[in-house]
Length: 118
Image 1: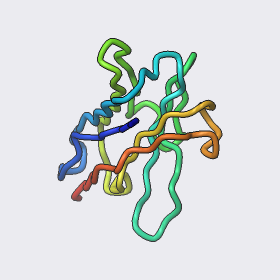
Image 2: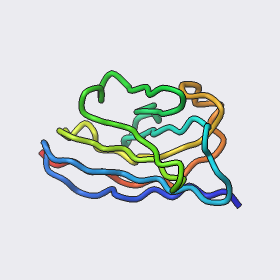
Image 3: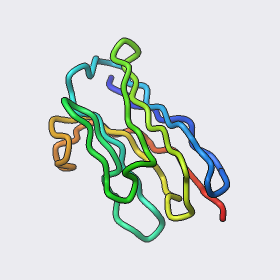
């Protein structure tokens, strides 16, 4: 059974940092695109960052967030710096066949809450 489990969310003050982790089990995702998405209350889920052969970021997080992966640990990370209240959301990791096409992400984690206070 394939599972993606996110961790590292929490409450942080504006300007602070958090590092999210997504540990995959059940199969190796080496070579597969892995992405981070987020959904704020009342808003649609949006792409945040992804890593495959390259990395991609939403404009809203460029320069502040960094996605990385450790294939040996089958884990993807999202380092989030200079957090702002508008970054408050549930963050999900996903694995799939396309870095930017959300419809082709097959496996999803359960999400981890990130709350940034002003």
